Amino acid sequence: MQPQNDLRIRRFTTEDIDFGMHMKTLAGWNQLPEDWERFLAWEPEGCFVATWDGRPAGTAIAIGYDDRFGWVGMVLVDPEQRRKGIGRALLMACIEYLEARGVAAVKLDATPMGKQLYDTIGFHDEYLLERHTVLAKPQTVAGSVVSLSPERLSAVLELDFAAFGADRSRVLRALHLATGVDGFVALEGTALAGFAFVRPGTNARYLGPWVACGPEAAEALLHSALNRCAGQQLYVDISLANPHTATMVAVCGFSKQRHLIRMYRGVNSYPGDTGLVYGVAGPEIG
Image 1 (cartoon, rainbow, N blue to C red):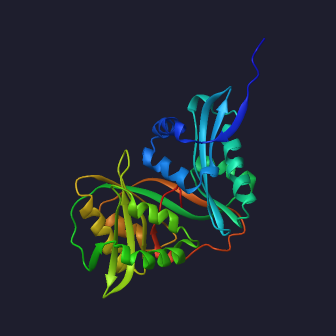
Image 2 (image 1 turned 90 degrees about the horizontal axis):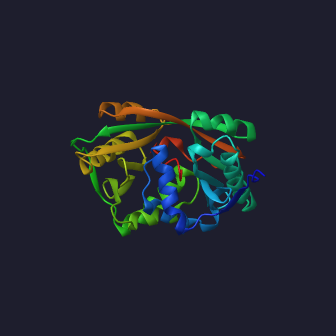
Image 3 (image 1 turned 135 degrees about the vertical axis):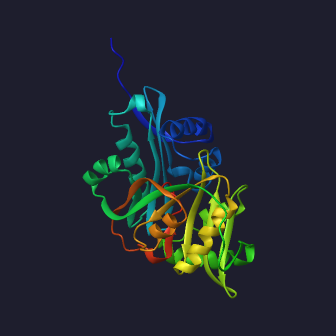
């Protein structure tokens, strides 16, 4: 007798991090074990594993940003287990979890392939993102850029709230304290004009979020990031809703690697100020 196929969704735990790393490696993604640990710290009830016949077959995470919107990321399915409805089941588990929390919208960054599914379940396009990469070389920084100090963190969180459209202070506080993550700010006099984080990854360092009040501050932050990563590969996911970003990274020698579509399901009442966003925090967290 043939065994009956059994698809189940359960909570992701620390014991699943090795499996999560295996999945992201198969996909060529950039996360480290520390990223999975942060997902669990931020939203343990929103981290999921799919099993097929009792064996892990896929992952997904969901993060709620108050009641404004939630985020879905790390939707990964074992290539040998695709076309069995596993990705859709993981996605729906995240959506149901977030909507039960009362969020007004669910958001995600879709690949062109994933968009084909998301279009069928009520997601709408918001704007385009592009992944760009460069082997970082030293740059001249015009303006004042200094490391992020605890005293300036509250101003960074306030600016990020305006840019992102919701409070993600727990995410930025965790990045600020994480080993190997570099946070820095652009100043105009003593006032905050922008901020950025650079964090490590398996394939490259990652610039994001990259937020600024204007192109001059954004450029100073970009040049500072390149200096801090000199000799290393650097990724950034730029927002094409900001008219300045594509030209800025092209001048610094970045090349396009892929594009993503930021999408939402529900009522997108809190889109944030896209004019402040030069680089997003990451497709997995917004």
